[in-house]
Amino acid sequence: MEKVLITGIAGGQGRLLARRLLENYEVCGADWVPWEGHPRGVSVHAVDLRKKKFEDVVRTEMPTSVVHMAFIRHFRGDPRRRHDVNVRGTKQLLDHCANYGVQKLVVVSSSYVYGAFPENPFYMDEDHPLSASRSYPEIRDLVEVDTLAQGFIWKYPHIRTCVLRPVNVLGYFVHSAIGSYLRMERIPTMMGFDPMMQFIHEEDVCEAIALALEHGLQGVFNVTGPGQVPLHTAIRETGGKALSLPEPVVRPLFQRMFNWGLWPFPPGAIDYLKYPVTLSGRNFIEATRFRPLFGLEEIFHSVRR
Image (cartoon, rainbow, N blue to C red; front, side, top):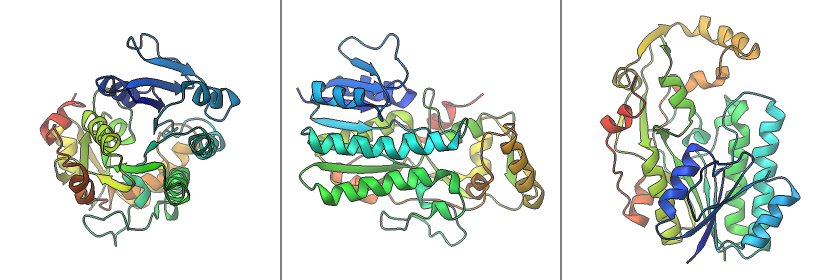
C-alpha cells in the first residue's frame, strides 16, 4: 500500500482525513500535539515541522505521499511564531519532500488568499491574483505558503504537487474562522452589506484531498461546495442572530479589542463580511469528477445551535 504522511494530523480535519485514507493507504502523521486514542494502524509523531526530529520522521517513514495541513490559522499568541510555523515549517517540509523521494504532495490552502475586495468578480478561477495581504496583512503567511507551494510545482515537476483552495469549511470537528464566527451568540455584520458566501462540509474536504491523491493531481485547484448563500442566510440557518453595525464604528473598535485579546479576529477580516469571495471549482470537478456529498442544509446543521 502507498503510505501517506499527514501533517497536522491531530487537528479536526487531520483526524477525519486519517480515517478516510485508512481505507486505501497506510497512514502516518506528524503534529506538535499528540493524538490520544488514534485509530489502530495509524502512527502519530509529536514533532515540530521546523525541527530535525521531523526530518527524521520523513526519513524513517519514507512516505510516498504527503498532505500538508499543519498551519496555525487562529490569531491567538505571538504573530511571529504563527508566521514562522506556517512559512518556515512549509519550507522545511518542501525540502524534505524533494530530498526523500516523496512522489505526491497535497498542500491545503484556503480561499482567503484571494482577498475580499469590491472589484472581485463572481466565480474567480485559479489564475486570479492572491491579494489578501493588501487589506489583511495578518494572513500574509498563508499567501506566502500558497506561493511557496506553487513555486515547488515548477521546480520539481516529477513530484505530483497539488495546491487545494477550499471555500469556507464547516463541520462538527474542524476549527475554522468562519465556524467560530457563526457560533457566536450575537453575530456582528456590516450595515448595508450582505455578501454571497460559499461553504463546504469538512467530510467533503477529506474527499477532495483523497481524490487529489488518487488522481495524482498537479497544479492549483479551487474546491467548492454545493452552492452559495448571502451571509445573513447563513447566520439564520445556523441559528444565530445578526447584529448589524456601522463600519466606521466597528473597525477601530475591533482593532482595539483585538489588540487587548478580547476579539479573535483582526480588523482585516471585516472585508470578508462586506465583499464576496466566490470561486469557480470547475477545474477540480473536470479533473476528478468531484461532487460534494453534503448539501447546504447539512453543512449549516453541523454548526447549528
